[in-house]
Image (cartoon, rainbow, N blue to C red; front, side):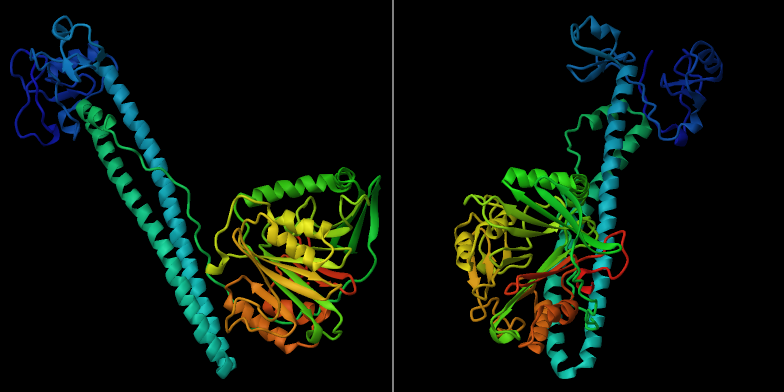
Length: 572
């Protein structure tokens, strides 16, 4: 007669009878596959006729569920699982009330349900590992973040001692900025850490529950868990983890590197283009001249540097899968700010990360469009091999551009937009088609603008420079009289427009203002190269200084991966 028991054999205090005997002989063995308790004589027969079954002493069974499943209607040992009714049944039920129902063999069902749970365990443990990895990364970043904040505070203490009266003011203001930024960023760390902690706790508890059911070998428990409608938390998109703020080093030194003035050397010529190098040894970059129709110029560009452009694009694509980290600076100086009041000096300093590929592909591309009244004028695009948009450059009408990406705007910027013309093409159009500052102002005012930026346009003919607060919603133009942001760390300076690293960036603007004030009346290309950008420490990747009245440009590129020397462009 079949019966049902449920007992932890490892801890049983009373004998359990043999399932195979008619009498009450105590069972000392247990077959895991058959779920039968066996006495010693029956154990020998069982081993003989059931090859491969795992028969162990009852004391070794531990927490395995030894329940013998029985039919609820007839009391006989169950052999099948009725999928429709979701219960275990015996052979009589198949021809009785469960006739025609879909049946599953208990052993096969047991194996299937275990596979389902094992798959879920594997998947959850994989996701759990990712959550734990991200948690550890955040903890590590938080530690580095706090360390850098502490280091910044230490540096500020040292700076405070060197010039008490002035630096006490700077120290106090910067500490307030740090506290505000730290408080803002700490909430980002806390929210994400709490979210991951909750998901980790949930998954750990669920994995523990599933493993316990697997260990028990209980079919009802497996069915219950495998068919429970619970979603498994997934790894979502990661929010951007903020970097700590940085300040210019108080021990920065001038850049005394000589300015290279030798003529470029021609190295290649094609139908509509010529390629030159400028510089010596390993410290060189390319200058490409192309002319003709837009197609002619593009085709010649590819003939001159096609292989290198492919390498550049592949490297940039891989780099952009992570991110570009950086800021920029700009200035325009004229009138009383410069030795020659009839001149205009302009700076464009690019502070993208030097860990990316750009430093290995510096190139100036000079375009000479066909003179048909449609394709614009000659212009030079300062950038990299294969770079067709413009963020740095000048044209034959003595106009030049500067640009700063804005990470810290204020409410005056309004809203950004994803629908419009990329700013790199708008800036290129200024170089290619605009002849005056008014042309550029008109273009920027009426453009379909997108993201938050500060743009700069200089016109050497009229000796005027304007910076532009630029977004999807606004375009505000500034000279030295209405310059913004209007803050103590961004004072107005006669005949100078300037922005250091970002819109709301007190530390760099403060240092830049001090250097511009110090050299006011003697701001030249040489002064900017020697005493302004290296002290402000701006222009990590690229520095371009335009002497627009003389129609000259001075360019420095960051140290390439195959070069020696100082790492940053502002040091070279």
